[in-house]
Amino acid sequence: MKLKYIDALRGIAILLVMATHTFQYSTSFSDGIFNNIISHGARGVQLFFIISAFTLFISFNNRIVDEKNNIDQNFFIRRFFRIAPMYYIGILYFLFQDGFGSRYWLGDFEYISVYNVLSNIFFINDFNPYWITSLVPGGWSIGVEMTFYLIVPFLVRKLTTLSKAVNFTLVSIMISLILFSLLKTNVLISSNRLWNEYLFFYFPNQLPVFGFGILLYFLLVRKDYKLSKNNLILGIVTLVSLFFLRDYIHSNLPFAFLFSIFIYLLSKQNLKLFVNRVTIYIGNISYSSYLVHFAILHWLSHFGCLNYLEVDNYLDYLFNFFFNFLVICSMTFVISNITYFLIEKPFINLGRKLIKLTN
Image 1 (spheres, rainbow, N blue to C red):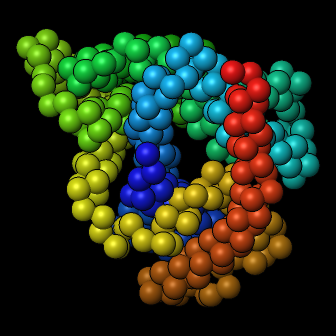
Image 2 (cartoon, helix red, strand yellow; image 1 turned 45 degrees about the horizontal axis):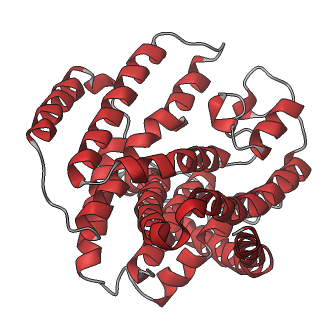
């Protein structure tokens, strides 16, 4: 099932992420509503997570009848060849770009260890604060995504109704809140700063976001609108928990809720402003763009190719930001188009061939 609005949403998600990172590299001027909006563009990653859960439930359920006993094996082959090749190239590239030396996410550690590299190769980097995103910029989201893949077959078989999906999402919210409240006051590493950031990125805090994507599957695909009394009880308990633990609420939940509403509305009406050739095209190369744009930002900054305009007022600041964004997007999409056709597509096709051979 190919849904144009889903591809477009991937395009919107990567544009949001790139806008935030462009903002971080652009000359600052003053705080304002524009700055606040752009700084939250990083939540585009959560939009990716929602879309991922939604589409994975669609594809897995559609293949259950045809692939039967081999469906789990085939699922993991597809996901590996979709994600791993480009990510492995990213590991090699960013080791070349940044070396093995100290960096922000390593905290007190002075170098990238062999174990750090191995954790990224096996996609378990999100289980360690020092490994989660210190090697590949943005690598935390890849580790979280791959961790979610491990439980998808189990979730698809267990979450067979909207009611069950609601319970799963509510329970995952409570678990994430409880874990955060406990771990926030029990810092397990030397850096409080790094620990707090890790608690935002790690898998338990992102799991409820995937839950919203599963809910959308039952609402939009299965047309299941039935809820049980248990949903109501658990919903009340969750709301009470949210109230008492409101100081521990990360921005994931409200953004996941808003994104879900946006996706639901877009599924009913493909607005040209959001669903068009440009956003669909960008969505198709969004994975490459996610990894590539970090390198583009690095080299443009390194050679002084950003912030051409002098910023004396807010209008100058806006022009400077959008010029930077245009340059970064243009270069990122050109290179990502190449990596998509030379790396992503061939390995996706290789995964398909391997599935045919093993079935």
